[in-house]
Image 1 (cartoon, rainbow, N blue to C red):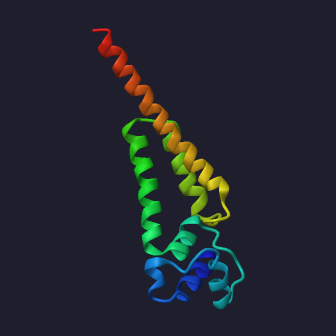
Image 2: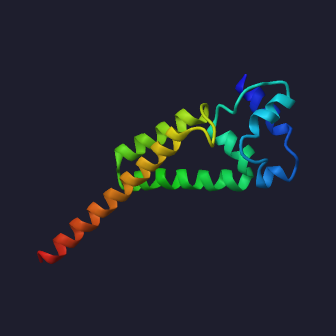
Image 3: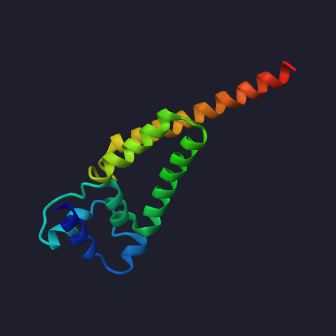
Length: 130
């Protein structure tokens, strides 16, 4: 059913909206036009409808960069969190109403930053001990 809702809403978009988006909180209106009265049930689909391919690519790039950094740093916590965020919000939530999505994404990003600071401090401490 979700595939039908997503497809129906996206088909209602004008051609230029694929690039810049249809605007915030418009998904439900587009879905209603296609015969469904549901919100997006996907942060990623809602991002595409709201902000277009530009916004979707920006969000995807940010999430992929967190995933790659977690792999590079061997940070199992951040890796697990970002996989959880992707898994949960691919079929749940919407862009503007899912505060928990942004909170989990921020915590994951911050955890990688804290690890970077810790690594830099260890390198600095080791170089001054020589």
